[in-house]
Image (cartoon, rainbow, N blue to C red; front, side, top):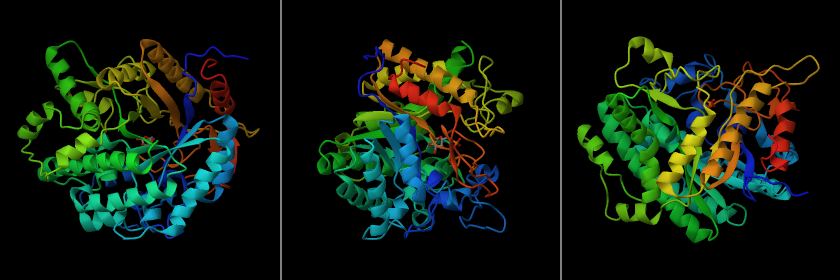
Length: 480
Ligand code: BG6
């Protein structure tokens, strides 16, 4: 049977996860601590990652740390990958925990046991014909590099990252073709801890030091592209940004200009450096206004040019609405993390993330118009409270509705002429939330019996959305 699908042949349908959110085994196999390991679960995580007094020490008498056990993917990867294969996944986006390979980050030799673990995972994926799409750094920076070196503010971290690149590229060159550099690199604009590895305490750290850290990461990303091409000639190395289309509250030109500025800094700045291999001119004014002078070495600008990305990958969950001057009520009504205001046309999830499928079509068009490079949606999904019914089923129609609407938007964007190569929905199996460290915020097609209080059998169950997504993949997106 030939299916007439708007999606291209070979489209990479699949799911996405990150090591620190599902593997568990946080101190097994020689693994060192990451920033995620010392951040507790629950609402407190949100405030700690901005608390200048946070001392990066675990305190199990006071807090719980759900990601220490995750969903035990470390031991159950075969069962989980078999379920992904049953849904028909063509691709699986995952990350390598840097600390399984270099436990502290600054060692000279990699940890063989960590390397072996990912060998086993890649071999299992290959057995099922699933293409791995591997993030090199997904919110799991070695803790030692944060406490001893100050995170990406230190140029030395670049040397350690280069060592990590050599280790994983040489080891997995026959197994992994698609690589992503830094997960949601632009998230550091609002919250530097996860990506850049420090908490900004004052204006110097908020501006000068933050953008210096970005500079080091851009060099690291360019190196990842360059070395990737040298060591694995058929590799494709992409950047990963969080894209949040930003609407002006109204047609007042003051608000429109403000929206443009907000969007350029958050949505475009990192992508522009990754794609064009140079700092965009609009940043000159920003740097001047905030007394930022980047320290560069000879050759830095050449490296940025030599290491431009092959494709753009991005996460999409929501849009945001901006206004230059906000009333205090508007200030708290919308997305508090991003400081944007409520959009009266949109509903929001239980975590106040405004649901906007058309925003995905807008994002795809904006990104393709700007970069003319293949696009890959590597995260999208609905975090929700799921309920297990008495008969054991999970009727997650709300998740199906969300995903259907977003996949329709992708279909429309393809008709608009966008080059989209794949879609890996976030948290294809329930895992620990990055933002709040909770298990209760579930995204999966596969339910995992594990609760925030540590209880649960870890049994996997298919939700209603499991068969629905399987059908979407089988029909290459024509039956939604
Ligand atoms: C992205 C991250 O921000 O969104 C993921 O790359 C994260 O790591 C996902 O899990 C969903 O966010 P949250 O806070 O619901 O886990």
